Length: 238
Ligand code: 13P
Image 1 (cartoon, protein in one colour):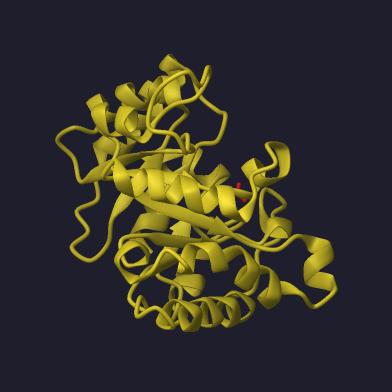
Image 2: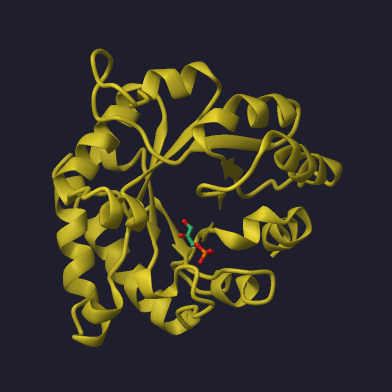
């Protein structure tokens, strides 16, 4: 899954999307998706319509509809053709004060609209250095797990250590695997151990294969490297 973050333009996206279309992957064992900014969702849905690549949004409101100026609802995202939505990305948690509880409310709103929430969790550098990684992800997951098996089994989890995002500093496959295994064990406590767990943080075409070879790493949430079609497609191939 490519997270374009706040990047792109009609013209630039057209080039990127054409590049993705040109060698549309036909994976029989994975999903491929891109998450453009809100104004470009319809452009991406249109450009990828007859391909295997699906489209997601980067955020949604926890509310269904109404007087929430500047917000976008899950049903609007579904209406324009999204099938996924990121919730609780660390940049939302950091810059927009999204709490663990709010993230769970947003995941519920996504499910209500028929979207698959991709719930992002991960510790900061200070937390990692203090040996708090597993405690932090457990705290972040708690309100999600409290939603129960019916809800959790329809989600995707993305583990993105904040210190690895946009820094070029990837977690080693072993480091990531350890956290993914702990997340899988938490998911198992509500019978949702089959939920896919993506790794995110400086994933690129050179390190993807090694990360994907780990038992509990089921895919990737890719930022910077998803803005170049050939690089993103090489990650998909891996
Ligand atoms: P980078 O791949 O640019 O490190 O970003 C990761 C990320 O935050 C994806 O959501």
